[in-house]
Length: 304
Image (cartoon, rainbow, N blue to C red):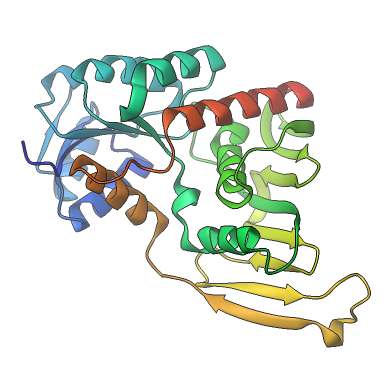
């Protein structure tokens, strides 16, 4: 079996991007997609073969699940019978019980696509946090907003907030304990959340699908300054040195560049390398479970 032969389950909006990058990385991609029009687009996008039913998928070295989040539990349960590595898009599931079960059954072969852990700018913020070059870390603040969402299987909190929880894992080393949350409700459906977790350090995130403009900002607050990822596609972070009494004119601002390689491509490359005997991907099923637990707790705090 060629270790770069991968089965892609689902080829919708995000699955097409996964297919694109797998093809660019030289993988052989066999796709499962029930929709006829999507199957035709999948072949045009470079898939080596496409079938309509999971039972018809030939043997592969690994599997990537890009189906709607509400189907993850059932799809992964079926795929675990193949006893090969699986990478599932976030969230692992949308309830603690199924996430717990899959984490136990998946062992060391089930991983979650927490893509921001592979973003080179986020990783640079993590290096700054661990190095202490800006003094002790005080907290982390992230903003993730845009207008509406093509996702209809889950609400905007499930769609957006898992990213911000895994930012904390990559930069702070853990998800702080949830303390408070406020859900933004529109027409009876959650469309956003503002949340506070931990204390030393703290995590604050704001996610919403009711902003006209798309915003993606991550701010690492430390005693001696702030490091900011103002735009994940900008190619740099800003390091601003100063304390509470430093006037604006005296602040020292430095730009640090990072690799232009996309986070998705880096994530998929790590999975392919794992199939070939390399180290496991960053986010295993246990981490996926912790994200689900934290998000469920925040939803309860927000009464979402």
